[in-house]
Image 1 (spheres, helix red, strand yellow):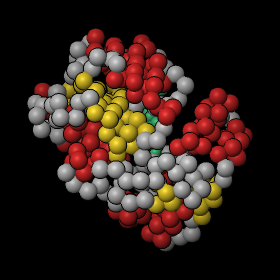
Image 2 (cartoon, helix red, strand yellow):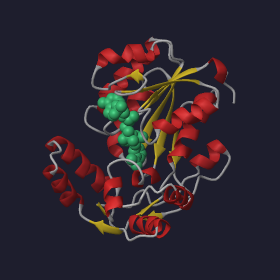
Image 3 (tube, rainbow, N blue to C red):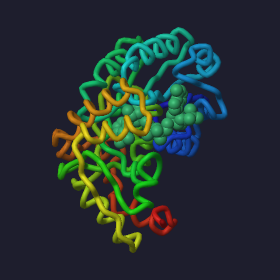
Image 4 (cartoon, helix red, strand yellow):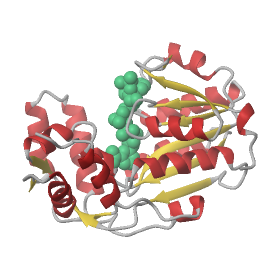
Length: 279
Ligand SMILES: NC(=O)c1ccc[n+]([C@@H]2O[C@H](COP(=O)([O-])OP(=O)(O)OC[C@H]3O[C@@H](n4cnc5c(N)ncnc54)[C@H](OP(=O)(O)O)[C@@H]3O)[C@@H](O)[C@H]2O)c1
């Protein structure tokens, strides 16, 4: 570690989310002073309300950015760019951006951070293992069925704890990872069918994987009341991001952390033991 962690205050956005929560834990374990920010977090922060930005940033030395609803969503590049420039103006020296692997829609957001004047690191992550244990897919998993437009494509599921550890290593690693775009995956390629089967076996129950087309998935989201623009973005995202382009492993976790990424099987064992997928 080359940065004086004890004297570093880091703002973590999305701090109650699947990644942000672990960034908070990992940063605290590394001795950083953490500001956990979100709309309902200890530090109030809303991407859609610029009046909350300055209070969150003032006095911080570093910031981890996670844009919601998605790093490639319409308006993400403008908001993240404006936030990153404000961060630099307020003396925040170091930024990390959580981005997505194989998502061309996210490139403008990444560029906005690169051009902000900060020392930046972009962390491009593959599909999270924790998508199956937290968030919108959990109800389906508990109900015995994951309906998803993932076909039979192979995806290198990553444990969000590894993303968090990489983010903190970048923030505390001095210049080592500054100006770098890090490609992060888990250690093993799995189809969504195989992933759900591993969960079902560990949870000792039946859970079906039901592949659908991105268009049909979008139509179902519309029926649930999602706004048309969001449905259009998500349909386009699933059509590009789940076409097999991510079906390869990367060295990112190993390079930054000097160890193997956590395996999906470990995640599944821990969550099954905790009763996550009980119906
Ligand atoms: N899911 C994947 O497989 C994957 C893969 C690669 C990259 N990504 C990227 O990861 C990011 C999502 O991270 P995650 O999965 O950890 O998040 P998450 O679990 O969906 O949680 C969302 C977090 O953001 C906060 N939030 C929601 N709306 C907000 C707003 N308008 N302003 C400020 N904070 C807001 C939430 O807290 P409050 O409700 O309290 O505000 C919460 O802390 C996205 O940028 C996505 O593109 C996802």
